[in-house]
Length: 103
Image (cartoon, rainbow, N blue to C red; front, side):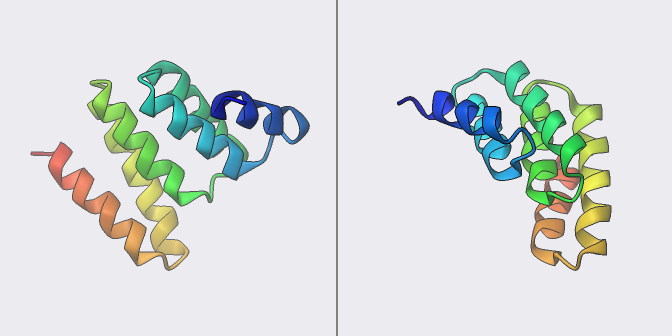
């Protein structure tokens, strides 16, 4: 079974499965289906606003799609959540991408 089909099947059974939704978004992004990937990241963060890796990877996908301002806003929100949760590693990654986008 194709990865995307498998992840969609999981999401049919459990639409709020953050791990599967993140995996689907990543797989779509990797295949160049940027609009679909962004939609999945948006759904992920709507369902689970504390899933901090989703902020980083969705910001990266937005930036790759030329949506720099949206990527910056996504990073700022994600950094706030990461710092609040004490996740300095992902906060540092987001800060590095933010610095790059703001140059």
